[in-house]
Length: 371
Image 1 (cartoon, rainbow, N blue to C red):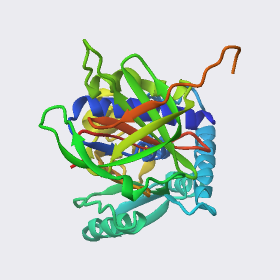
Image 2 (cartoon, rainbow, N blue to C red):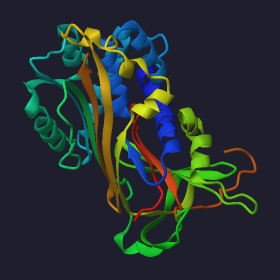
Image 3 (cartoon, one colour):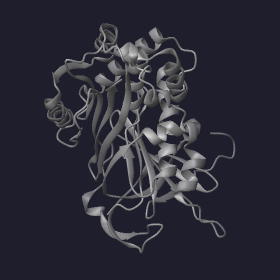
Image 4 (cartoon, rainbow, N blue to C red):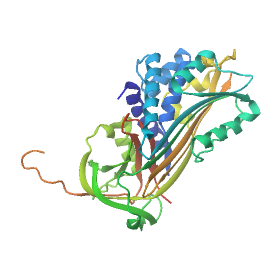
């Protein structure tokens, strides 16, 4: 795993943890576009803003040229996921400017060379419609990013459609009770399958991994003891911070997995969360993006929006997201077979999807109530 990929994993869980702490209910987001978008913005930021972005994305002292090269390699590796797998993955970037405003040549060159960024300069009145059309086309109609009229916009979109390596049997899906934390139990279509799965068990939680052809979807569930009933938010903060769970040894064990079918959508404005994580200059100073634009007064970011959706059923998962960064001018002896586990997600749980080749987090979220 490259340094940029490793930093992306850590910052993905940190960003999700900050959002999850603030938000209740269902949640889904795509952290990878944040990594790509902020890596590109490093090429158009002043020195003080670069330092804040580096800290946010956990890039350390890695040089800009190396960040660009590793980001390019990461995107190329992700482009190869589709080959012969019967699955689909798309990561696309675009830069938009409202005429007569323009991005600086150096920033555009970095976008084209390292981030395969589509560049468009359009009349100000047309920008919202053009962005809407681009987001729908890129995400197979799942996400329609709606922007107000703006000076500049940086978009990063991702789309994922994966078939389970071992699908659930439709006939095994039955109505069963789901127990939300703050509402009465109700019936949901619960998928069920027995098999051998990568599994990890902690003192007050357990996790299981289900495989696609080129990705893995992890599920995290609190365990209730005789004296303790930890909430999912508690477990998320304990287990997911900085990707701790991804360093733990999942062992393949026989077991029963029950997961409800679900479809989630989350539309978020991320500036408040990014401020809490230490990114401020980008939103406060027109000097922060002065190197990125030709306007003499510079530019700053006025919105960071992401719209995400995911559907999980017996065949697999389909997910999409569009991130918009809107800018304004100015076996040992005595071994015994492990006891089969039961992972029954009949109460709120978390999930995340990682790419097997690079390890980066493609989507992450929480199901508070699948209905």
